[in-house]
Image (cartoon, rainbow, N blue to C red):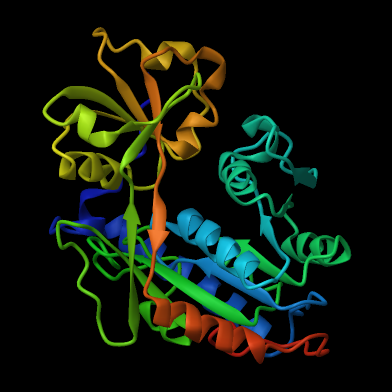
Length: 346
């Protein structure tokens, strides 16, 4: 069984930060600051897509709920009559140097687990490419009238019209320090430049929403057999022991969600974007296996009748969507601007 890469205890706890991490943090901060300044001053160019671009990302490393929010965003744009496309790097896929279109029947090993999940849920055009500028332009050429980037808040080369930061309501920014002394890719102040700040909360009350933030709940009430067949309500598993599998940036969030449904969880955490094999599921007891959809798209080939995917759906206040659509309606198209502000937006 694979061993997950857990966060150091000082990132989200009270453990002291090692001296070596503090020294590396200074180097990281200097390099990141130079990079931001280079874009802000036009030394490095920021390039535009011919359609508006919305970036969904985070400041802290780890799973925050970006992909469920991306799916909800694409579905809402479709309901409003827009033709959204999704750009993603496709982390963990084979041959990341090759750009690909993503279709619902593709292999996750070739296109990435998260892009495949987006394609299956939304039916939208999805493009994976390390060059997000090229991906956004390809989507526009394919007929998309708005591009949604799943991750990429720090990918300043692609100009963006709207930035959405997603925050884990329980862990937030941890100790507030930059990598590797803390979990932050950029200083906390960077978040103030984002147009929308979404906090992933839970039914247990984790994640108080502060002024200027929007609450998001990831809801689930069903389990879907990987081999097909009728969905089962999660309440069926209440009071039972199950093996719970999660290969996420923050697998504990998935386990906590199952426990909120009264399920006795035997947790099995794997690294984010883990490549599963049949032996990963040799747990020594024949209990039902509940896993995230992101994991399930990589387990179809060796799934058994007791393997279930647990889909989640992002829910946000209607006022959030009204504000977002209003901002999108005023977004520029084809403005030849080569710079980004110090905060990162074009």
